[in-house]
Image (cartoon, rainbow over all chains, first blue to last red; front, top):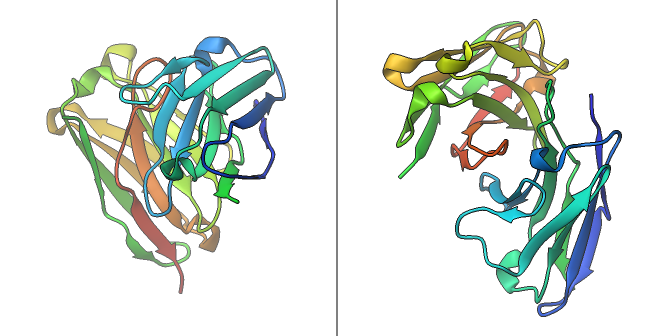
Length: 109
Length: 119
């Protein structure tokens, strides 16, 4: 089983600032199998990034993903008020199980 | 428009069973793997299993935490996936989501079904 560790646990920033969220895997993950999700209270998660760096439909270009091997990053440039939420990374390496990181809470300073 | 709608949540008693349904529309259902993910109150997301699309054999995989107690199935004629949880435990209390997608990620999610396990 591949474990994903996200850091920091909580990130306090102001609108307009840049956010950098980290996801570290316990073993190498193919770039095809790493995704990022955003979740707001009371809502289902929303896919932001798939295949490490491809934005899902309708996702603004201030969201970007990068990384390889065991280290992956989600970057949000110029934070908007609606970006404050919890972010999860997730891997879908074969064979299962698929796993999620524990989440990073992005809160407004 | 793709829609996934879960139903069947509610109060379950410890040791009993509960079955959730996920009705889909807007996708070629038989081609899609159907995953189930849960989220305990105030906690993160936990993948619990999936069933492959019919064209991929319809086989199932489970997380170790639910293996032996969870059964995922599908009815392609009804475009519906099912999750049955047996021998319910208090720690199974969670919002259960069905989800699917492409590119090895979960593009589409249901609204979630709350399952509360309590005597």
